[in-house]
Image (cartoon, rainbow, N blue to C red):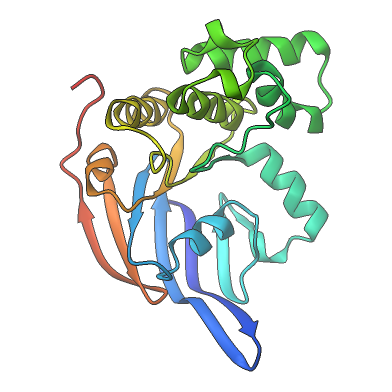
Length: 234
């Protein structure tokens, strides 16, 4: 049974008198626990699809159903509440708050939830331990390497225990060893915790960690392939 279902999913923007359509009638089914890589040229609709699944944007036409919830029917407040519970977002440039420590950055999503201080601490500590950055919890982003910053960003994405992790070029700003470590971490979250991961990437090497790869062009699915998956630790 499909966990995420896109039916004739379309997103349009107006730029002057021109209609821009980054997604054009996309049909797609994503099962729970999938690790999906999205590839395609710039402007193909990858990030638009990611933002729709993450509840950051809403479709112009068609439908997007996630675990039985039609995202397109939610109000802005309902969408924000749904997103805070069900989705963790990992950005290419980390998007950490520079004046907050690693611990405080990971805490941010939890401030939207009614939790005791003890429960917040437990969740933050667990998330930092999961990504092996708990020994840097009192460090500020400027005191961390790029790979360490991305680990903090991933801890922030998983601290609410979301069903879905969306990642937009998560290794795009990292050197090769750091990129490998981050991809191993995402793969572990998928395999051991059952997280559904949708990742945009331009790097074919990162698709080896995914279960399958979809290629988009001009807002439509043009190719699908099953990756020769690289196991964590290899």
